[in-house]
Length: 92
Image (cartoon, rainbow, N blue to C red; front, side):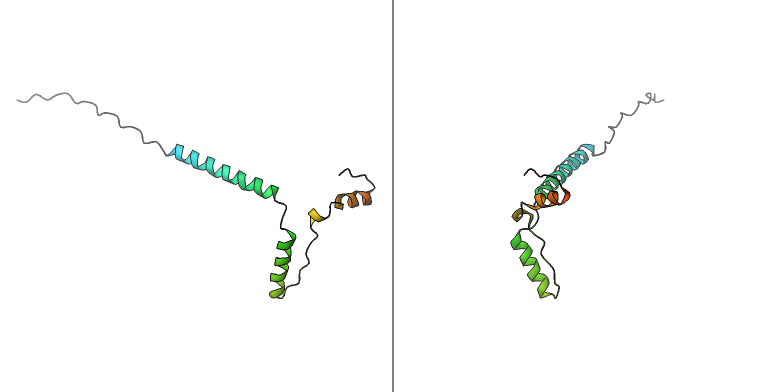
């Protein structure tokens, strides 16, 4: 007769963790990039006068007639004129 040994419990397998650290790192990098782009766009003053004129020429070639808005950097008195129209003083 063969003596049977008592059954041993199987060694517990390590739990397969989801790749959470990689997801968190990826989300952090994406958030930092989005913040950098947002700050850059917020600090941008828009197109320069030369870029506006180029756009006007490109549209003119296609048959579109557009007006170029005034460049805010060339008109520092804009706020003063708006405030004067409202009857306020503007400290620039």
